[in-house]
Length: 344
Ligand SMILES: [Zn+2]
Image (cartoon, rainbow, N blue to C red; front, top):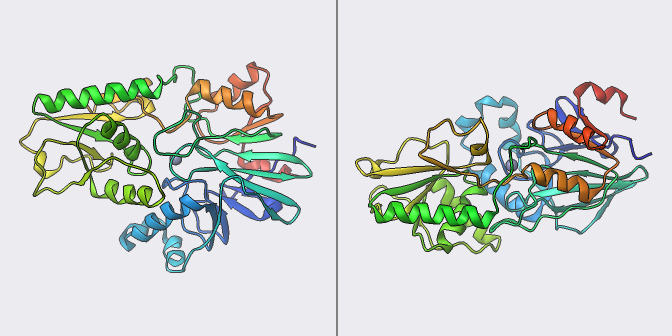
């Protein structure tokens, strides 16, 4: 009974037929579970089912979206003009939905990121969303629950992705930034404004590095602080007042060097697990630190070991991870769109 598929693909989107619930849909839906606030998972819907903290993150992100940016998603414009109804749930406080019980629990990926557990007659089914197992400085402690089936991400599902301990990476980041400042250079860290940037700020701040954050990073950091996350002191980057004596935390999309550092010596650092593989940052930065908010390869295997699922479904990341799991004796399969026809 446990082999039944709780999660299917419909309209290229994850969908739970039993609950009429969409999962991390890029198109506006009547009711959708949103695992976390990154742009490849979070969109406004009529009803957004999510964690309390992620509702704060998403409300901030959706609220800031300028109408001009909606053109890539014409159907989004209509929805965004309507108010989102937030159905929020605290971690590990189950609720009933028809014949099923649902529970959100921490994914440890970014603030408010959750996994979804659906329990019913067919067993316990988990959707991990993006997750990691290592504790971080600014996201909730991740959790793994025993389940019968799991639909998991496998972004770093290749053996070369073994991240050093976070404390080791943190030490290297601080030493690199300190050396740059001592030599009169501006250390500049490229980090996504949700999650990675706050981790970088916590690490650098704890190491005594003064900080200036890009506006997008600073405003998301305010959401973190409102949610109770302690961040070190930082100033919002201002071209007029920036003195070049602080490390800059900058979103990767804002690659153009800010005005105030032109003419200064700038050293750039990428923060991504991809620096360990061929997909690195293409040499666009001086250095890279493998600070990731995803599980590395050993953590993906560890997750399966801890959750002990009878079936593992994969739908993100490299397909060869399916083969690697099968070799280890795990019943793993890639979720295909056409499987929706054979669902129940
Ligand atoms: Zn993410």
